[in-house]
Length: 314
Image 1: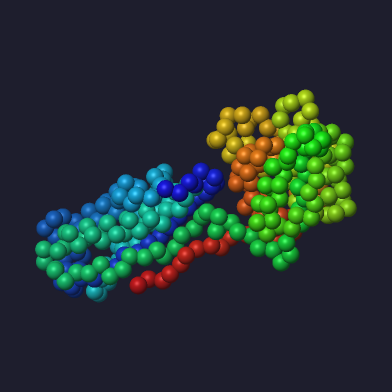
Image 2: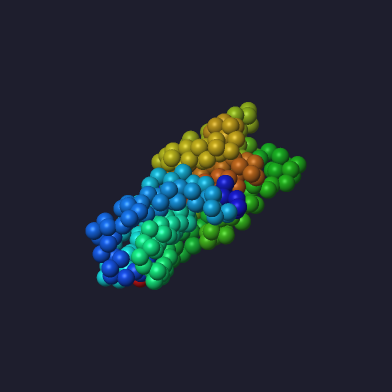
């Protein structure tokens, strides 16, 4: 199985379709409910729902998911039954396999219940119609790459006593996401210089995003939140809350971070923890939302996102 622990939980949905062709007389039996083994559609519906919940047990590399809803519906045509299945989950990975499994097993169940009087049935197709959720749903595009800075706050790094790794990682990840990192620097844990640098990034350089790393804990030299006090003009508390909540699922010590986030003018400033692992997890938790925030600040609004694998009925 792939490791999806770094992904953020989102609401995910998928819709799949199966097409079972059968003789017109067989389809008439299904409509009338004249099937010796019972109500074929209801049995197939239950089988499809149950199969979706058991997908990870029968397909080896599928992750067990907390399924929120499975729906299976049937449309009886002139020469075929169209089976449509929808699965929904709030999870770190998609539910397309659950939707595909639901319609596949529903089709097989119908085949089993009807084969006694129709040996010519064919499961013509099983395909994914649509999936939503996950990172593809929240991608942002910009006509001009947002400009960013990474500010490392560490006495040890400022004195060359320790190599900075978290700041370099943040720079690499931001550039990989399409941002232009125009400045990277290291400062000691001193509130005055930190605040001056943040003001310069916002007021003079007019950057879109500034990410700091370090100085957010409870130590006597951790003063980054205090430096933010006189800089940010509008708080964005949800960003810091999401960062702590994501970290809390991985280590209980994440609750000790006092990092803040907010706007000065049109510059979004976000405090990350100082360790390399925590900084990486911070971007895992926040990056897509930060990009959306930059789009909102640029005036794009709160519109929805695209991102679906779609297809019409067979």
